[in-house]
Amino acid sequence: MKRCLSALLAFILSLCGVSLADFSSESAQKPVLRALLVTCDRFVSQPETTPAAQRNAEMMRQLLSSDERSYDVLRVECDTLSTVDSFQQAVAETFGQAEDQDISVLYVSTHGLYTPNRTNLAAALLLSDGVTQERLTAQRLSDILSPVRGTKVVLLDACHSGAFIGKGLSDPVLNNPFAGEGFQVLCSAGGSEESWYWRAEGGETLNGAGYFTSILASGLGAGLPADRDGDRCVTMAEIRAFLLSHYAASTPQISPEAGDFVLFRGKDEADDADEAVRDISFDSAVFWGSVVNIGFSFTLSRPVSVSYQLVYDRRGRWDFANAPMMADGGDDGVLEAGSYQRNISLRLGDEAVDVSGYLMLQIYSQEESRMVLHESRLLRVYPSGSDVALEVETASRFTPGLGEEMPVCVRHDVPCSLTVTVQNLQGRTIRYLALDEASRPQRLTPEGSCFYWDGRMDDGSPAPAGRYLIRVQTDVAGQTYYAYSGSFVLSVEVPKG
Figure 1 (tube, rainbow, N blue to C red):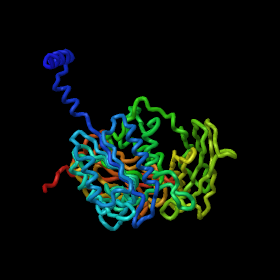
Figure 2: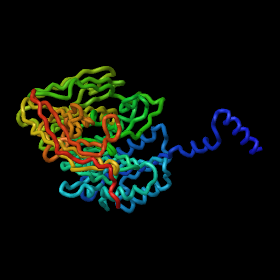
Figure 3: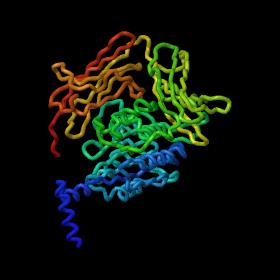
Figure 4: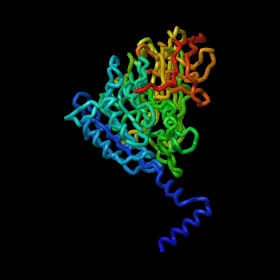
């Protein structure tokens, strides 16, 4: 009887041009998704962050659970993995059955360490349970994950996490142990930057989470606002673009720079019914002179308390200690559902902000005991007149075939908008790395901005081997400035050994 049914099924499928072998092969190729979420709040050598990292894990668990592709394994470890051996065992247990078509997601929220005068491969994450603590270096993490088959997606919410992929560093480096096929990496900050948790005036952690993970979750959450092309799929490039627009505290980095891997797939029936604050829009993010008028609008879907936090960039870091919350609303502190327009005016005295000229405005809502960060907008105060001291530095050569990406460090000592292009030695532009892109405080020494070239031209095709250079242009106070790098070599040869 079974044989007859099989024959009948084969006959029906053959009429549709489909064989049983094709059907079995298609089923076998469906990827299995697994995730391991590792967070640490209690430390031996660093300040405790409870419950911020744990709330990060809960947000990520809820987020990944809503992915249309569905996760077969979703493991959460909070303050339980305090040694490299226990971390490696958890990775083996979670991802050990992965096949070539599978996707394995590792999310880590903890303190990150990096010493600028050492190789970026020594950058480390702290594994801790409050009693025992060990360092997990970039190279060791790569070694642990490399045997896992399929695609490894690494999401790091930690200070200096960009150093793990050699990005956001003061000196251009090519060291990236996650380069090449198999790895997709998203970091919360460049190698020279800190990541931040929500802090109250007294320094205690609020009932929120990390700034980065909060905005990441909002981009992939209700309404899928990070989905630029409306296909319900958010690539690494799309989520990074969303973060750069809506997240100000640090500069997210990805590897590879192309960012075409689909990080998240939204469900067709998803909506934004649970989003209390929507449609946040700013009149401008760029200002000149000592008077700053910050105009913005938003819509509330239901009555809610709304607060703002304006944070100054002082002496090379965000001054959260002197950035109290400003509540909006009437006597009860609640705004009714509807649309709102707000304006904050500031007069910046000599001591208000440092020479970097950056501000950050954060918008929160609070319902009962739950506080939600909706927006972290970077605002720039451009100089009314200044020499930007524009310079550009690169490595001497790189090989895209090895997964290397050319680091480009543009030095400028004031906020500005940059156009960065790759040119051949005949002066022809083959790739735009930035087009009138506003700078961010990336904490480089000297100050500046980082860009990366993956060796492809604007049409997506690989650039031929040869020598190239970088051209940078910016306009400040009506004056145009240019800078050129020395030439560097794009090699297509893969060294032996």
